[in-house]
Figure 1: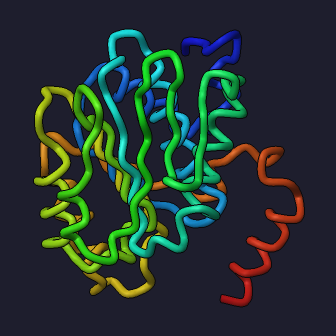
Figure 2 (figure 1 turned 180 degrees about the horizontal axis):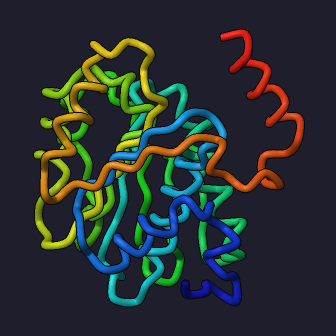
Length: 224
């Protein structure tokens, strides 16, 4: 894998995602549905991919939008996750993060990452970028959204004006098999433009999680 400012991506993403990274690198799919419990590193992977791809010279006109269902959860989840990705890649000096409005800006080009709560799907219509188009879209905690129609409306509003897109949907699989998100992911497996990845904490490097995390997870398996 390539390096960013001397930092190898193999040291930033879990080995379970190497195949997905190469798939993205070779433009094989548009939609990436990532399911996995806590410690599966799916959110870390998505944040790394967004930063890594936006900083490529050929992507200098591409922006990103990241959604959580509830706006109040943005700062302590996806905003913090993007901040982590920028830091671990060693490129903090190239990015400016602000909380009001909540965004991350790549200083060399002016590209933006915009963070949005989806309390109302209509809010997505008001998103504007100063140049280029929105090429990266991430729905975090996908199962918390209202349903397939809400997701479709957002995608139709945001995914336009360009030729190359990456759409990430990440979630912990809901316990109920009848949950709309589980059904959605199963149908997505049939699409040729979609890759579905399923990981757990067992596919993550143990040293990244720490022994206490492993012990607690194993105990939870025994009692539940």
